[in-house]
Length: 416
Image (cartoon, rainbow, N blue to C red; front, side, top):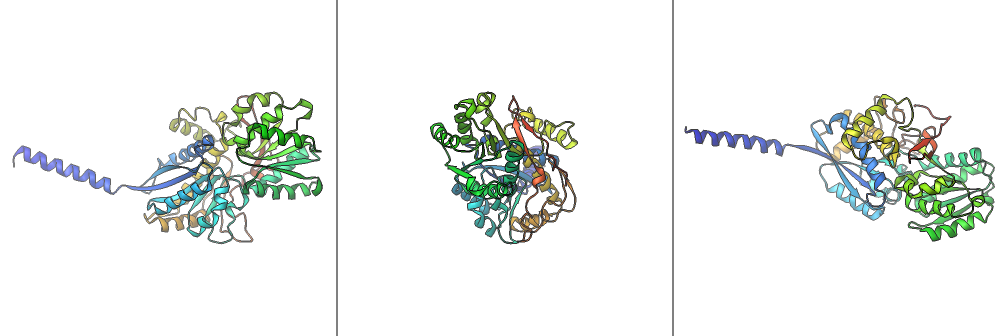
């Protein structure tokens, strides 16, 4: 055989081998349904936390490469539904990661569960999200839960700020409505009379002038503090509106964590420095806590390696809860995957993975705590079955002068 012919044969064999391997490449996709347009900071924080956790296995599991797919729902429930339909048509899509808004997962809850979409929620607090009334409940959460968050906010307002007439300022969405119910129950236990408890509703995209009108009415009432449930876009205008009032008329804000989901601090830095009082809920972990755990040290090191520009200093990361919760969820997912032999049949694999999440056999070390069987099978008598965090894991917090988050001590906090 001529040398030229031999080289052609060898080249053909090499190319055939290469493309044969390419054809057998196995992939699983994780769809990230989030608001990359209006709350980019929270979306990126979730992505970074999740990818940092998955770096422990080199973003591969059981011979499958893990592909992370960004899907921007822009805060629109219908766009979120479109992503779910795309997910169901993808033969390599294993699960969805969702956040930060609750309405897409409350409005589309029946569709999610009837179509067996495995949805992991590291940021969306609406109470109904994980409480679909069926054992066929496909939504799991490592995030603050509004059936408990309202109690923390109410307790802080009454016990720490000595509020006697708190006024609820809530966005007009299912998220705001679920918080109203919880806070009314919580405040009733604090001897706040029902008739004295007022609520003002606002819509998304409320701007500065409207915010000033709303606050003027609240300040002219008997209110002595404000329980705020809203996101960063509207929250910045209410803080600016409060700062425009004379100092003796300003009321303290006790806020849900939605304000931390965007570029909030940098928009209101000067107002906060001019003595507008603001506290907000967070989960009970901070990269500012010393001494750092081994888990926190690993997360910092790996995040810097993966995202050198965005994660250069996690102590001042925008939307830190997104990173923290997604990192912990990523660790939980890896533990569940160890119990789930993947077949490549995504419908079958989703069912097995769901069962594994509900029956984790080993504790999982996270940033917030060590998770010991964080999930179980949902039932009417076990409504928190798909909630990994409890009231003990919710703290109050404030911003420091550089935009970092100072988490206040929580006497109820424990690792369990």
